[in-house]
Length: 146
Image (tube, rainbow, N blue to C red; front, side):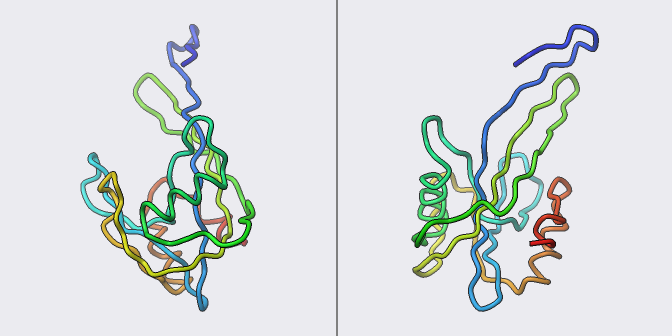
């Protein structure tokens, strides 16, 4: 992590996150998840960190399979990227989120090895946007434009 001497703030690029934009019958796939520091569960697109040495497509395959039990079909395409800055008292961390449109097969069977995903649902697009609006850090504009 780099430190800026004039402000005393540190900056670090944490890494990439890949998110799945999966659709069936006009519905988007959302997962309900709750991290250890979250006061309550929240709905989000299925997503996860890209591991060191792992490509975006491989990470998307792994995340869909591990978290939800779905199999990625075909070749996904990046439809938008978002830069997320997480500010602390003395630091700023940056994460690059790559959202990929993808096709999938199988039935939803959440079995997240990290225990963060509580459930998953196919949600009407308007309802999905409303649920995503509850995430303070999530920028819905790219998804709305897509």
